[in-house]
Image 1 (cartoon, rainbow, N blue to C red):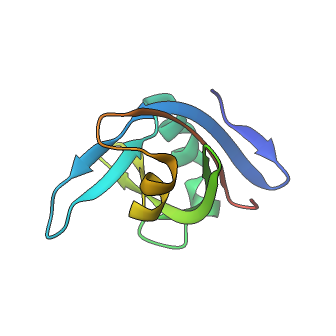
Image 2: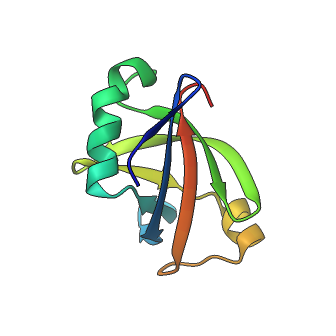
Length: 105
């Protein structure tokens, strides 16, 4: 879905697969599609609070929360907190629909 301006923010809705990024502790993410990442990058100068990190309001299923996207390999990643994954019954490899508003959300 193309980005939509919603009262000073930019809204996205997309479907992606949950993946695990191993580190000192496992972290779970879903990546914005290439086109949405490119749209967000164009607006990032007015949305970021530094280091390319962008605050967003995210909704998956019935769960809504605030988090920050960060750039990785030309795309933006949405971190999925354990509490969100548990509330929605999500696990690595699941395909999910994400709604989010970056800036002004």
